[in-house]
Amino acid sequence: MATNLEFINQTKATSVTSLDVTGVFTAKYDVYQVHISTDMDGAGYFEIRLLQADDSLANESKYDIASLDLQSNTTFGQYKFINQNGGVGWRGIGGYLDDGDGYGFTLNVFNPFADDKFTIGMAQSGSINNGNLFGTKAIGVYKSTQSIGGMRVTNSSGQTHNYINVTTYGVK
Amino acid sequence: MSEFGYIPEAPEQSFGNNKGIFTPTDIYDLTRADKYTQYGQLELIETVVADDSVAYYDFDNLGDYNVHFLTANNIQGASTTAQNLDIRVKIGGSVDAGANYQFAQQLGNSAGTFSESNSTGFNQFIWLPNVDNETNASANGYAYIYNAIDSTKYTFGTFQTVIKQDVHTPRFSFGSNVYTTANQCSGLRVFLSTTGNIAEATISLYGIKEYS
Image (cartoon, rainbow over all chains, first blue to last red; front, top):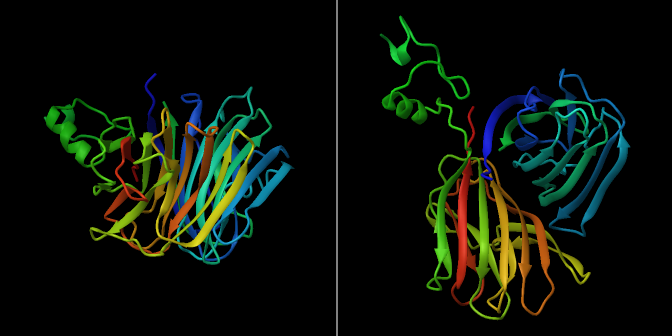
């Protein structure tokens, strides 16, 4: 089976605290790959909250997250939460940001649009925290069969992102 | 008749929204303008196949991609001593081998040994550890590189590998890297970090195409 990425959408914003990416998950694909670049001078955890197919927040308290925080200057940490609410979502799935030096993040999403399956994410990232590398290898599961159409990219502390660029691909 | 078979004027064209009848010239022009829908956004830039003649390969065409994807298939090093296949950025054509890199990686194997390693002052992106050329040995993996062409941001990387050495149980690694200088990279060097040539390898660099 040939496999490839098929561009769906790029959503951009500058000087915002969050960005909604809507209508990117559809019945056309089961698996998606999302690349996010951003920049934030203040400190906070990177968050992804899922949006339902009607663009409303996926608000059930069924977000699970587990991340191994790979730090260049200290012993690795863990970020984990069971049954997080929709107002927080997958907090920590892309680590911790500050310093305004850029960011790299890749998320693979499985079965978001299906209304009979949970939505599952696998992520890896690199960012800078207080001058040191803060990487992650993380999973997130939204233990709901709500049909998911998009995502909200934001952070845990209401900081302003200098920019957010979200590029979504379908995995053929 | 105007462009694309429309009278009196053609509609605006964009990726995912092409209307009309297209001549080969139209397709060529629209493709160059990033306005023609061609699915397949994982775009191969270059593949190198090692033949035991050199210790490194330079990928000097990064295109205009914000995200790059590297694959390493069946890597075998210079000897039975474990070596690393790592990455350095090139700035203005020159390799930066200074202590301008940081990394953090998790290692593990099927015998149950897990460990972590990190550094805030390293001389390269780490990628594939424990590369050697024992019988049936093979190292494989991938890496994403972010912001390499952005002169205002650090260059980040993430990676995952699986390695089989003949005398050891299978092992994995994954982690993150950063090049802590805001600079536009002109290329990437994939190299064996100890003396000797890369005996076998297929290494590919892809760009992940975006449309704004």
